[in-house]
Amino acid sequence: MEAMHQGEVVQRAKEVFMSGRSRPLHFRLKQLQALQKMLKEREDEILAALKQDIHRSQYDSALLEMIGIDNEIRLAMDKLEEWTSPRPVEKNLLTVSDQAYIHLEPLGLVLIIGAWNYPWALTLIPLVGAIAAGNAAVVKPSEISACSSLLLQTLLPLYLDKEMYPVVTGGVSESQELLQQRFDHIFYTGSSRVGKVVMQAAARHLTPVTLELGGKSPCFIHNKCHLRVACRRITWGKFVNCGQTCIAPDYILCEPHLQTPVVECIRQTLLEFYGPDPKSSPDYGRLVNQEHYTRVLGLMEGYAPVLGGQTDASECYIAPTVLKDVPPHSRLMQEEIFGPLLPIVTVSGVEEAISFINEREKPLALYIFSSDKKTIKKMIEETTSGGVTVNDVMMHYTLNSLPFGGVGQSGMGSYHGRHTFDRLSHHRACLVRSLAMESINLSRYPPQDSQRASRARLALKSPLIDLSKKTYVWAVSATILAVGLLVTLLVILLIAAGLNCTCWYWRGFYN
Image (cartoon, rainbow, N blue to C red; front, side):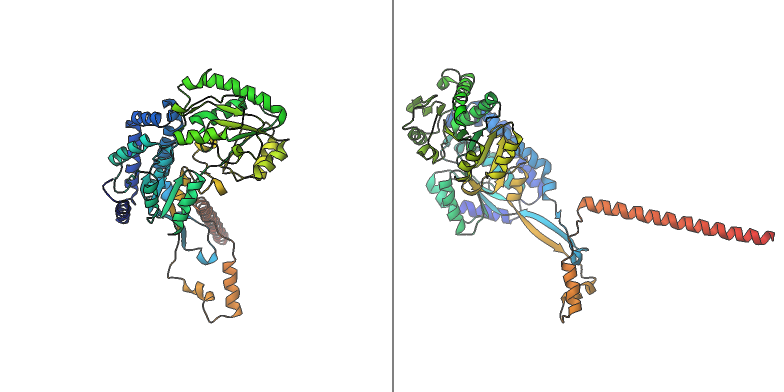
């Protein structure tokens, strides 16, 4: 694939899509099965690449990436026939005898630009949806996770249709060249800064985009909650993958009197998770490269950590670090941290926490820890975020029946499971009418008069009639029952009439 120019790769994928190769369901299922086979057969190689890229343990990689991809593939294979079936819609009086439905069809050629922090999941999960929806897709993994990128380029053509799903590797220049091409959808996961570049490029061709970005996901700890459990869950979500997770809790909001107990609970949890020296723990990762190490290190300037703070540039290592009494307008609170720093900002209570969240850009996730149902309800109703998890962190991402995505600066569009399929499908409105019963349509034809206009208005303003499968079955059953009762009544009447005639006959005979 490297021997071909970017434009040639894109053009070839378009031509193959236009041939109709990806439309049959059996082709899509075959590709999904092949992708599943690749993950199973090459798991050791994938886990080794992730270890080299980000120093992540094989257990975390399986938990955080491999299982999620496999779940998406299994769901798509199991539900594909259902997802692709025509979806009946409600009708009005003018169309009650017609077929009205939504036809799901492929968008065409999709560009998938993956992210480096979860290079397999954030690249392959969108690809699963693209395959299921019948699209062709050009896959561009992140060059930052170099080992995973090169391995994906090697493996994908061995298992999938290499013309339909080519892999393009490289850095910024290769991505820019790709974005010059015309696609039918662009699916990008990464930073808000690059998201703007992607959107500008897409605008030249009016190409729709899905942008899965990030932001500062707040974590509010209410005074009514099990603090030890809350801090264990927050500590896991913040420091797994060395804090390089787009939905990691970015900072804690709590009342001043909770600060010291929160720090103590986190200290105990870090000891439990990583031992006295996280650097030697096989479960604690590293920042992906020197550039990101330097950026995160800069965010710590001017602060005296209450926990952690140790660094080693030679390994891109920063210990799990907690900072107290962080000013709301500090640099640390202005940009997404994307590293193992956890600031604590104090607020007076629920009302101030809500105001604090609403005064900032809409986050990708919101985390609420409370045992008070009214507080939970109030925070969900009075704030906005891409997703919410209550009394835990990041777990809404694992449920592929829920849409995952951002809002505002944290992204646009959502995916996972059926939501990915719908996102990468064109929902085509279809109305199939008969040429018979033309008299019904006369009210809309000229010459018009008040009587015709009144009839047309009545038909168009009529309530929508739900003729979905359930309603249809119920209506047919009710009709059969009604006909049965009518026939039974008729038979009874006939028998009664027959008996009456017989009585009259015998009465006349004896008389």
